[in-house]
Amino acid sequence: MIITMADDLPGRTITSVIGVARGNVVRARFFGNDIVAGLRQIVGGEVTEYTKLLAEAREQAFDRMVAHAQDMQADAVITMRFATSMVMAGSAEILAYGTAVKLD
Image (cartoon, rainbow, N blue to C red; front, side, top):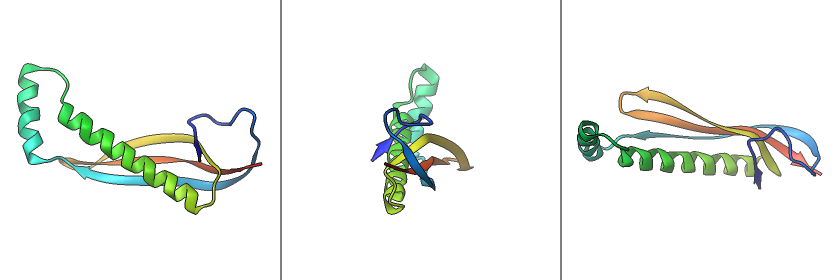
């Protein structure tokens, strides 16, 4: 499966657009991490607990998008993007999406 943020694939011909492939996950903060993150706010620096949480969520959303594209029998996903939105205080949705296409 080819995944790209580009609009096309050099050297390959897109024969058809299947539709939007997507994968999402909603993740909530963990109370224990909030305590450590609060301390980091006082001294400054990267809040590694949240960096790790968001990286894992992006990876999970990405994997779900790939699985959705495979279910659609796509050969590639072009114009792939990530979007994030707050669902409620302390939780966020990560969405990975792109255009599922067939290649010749």
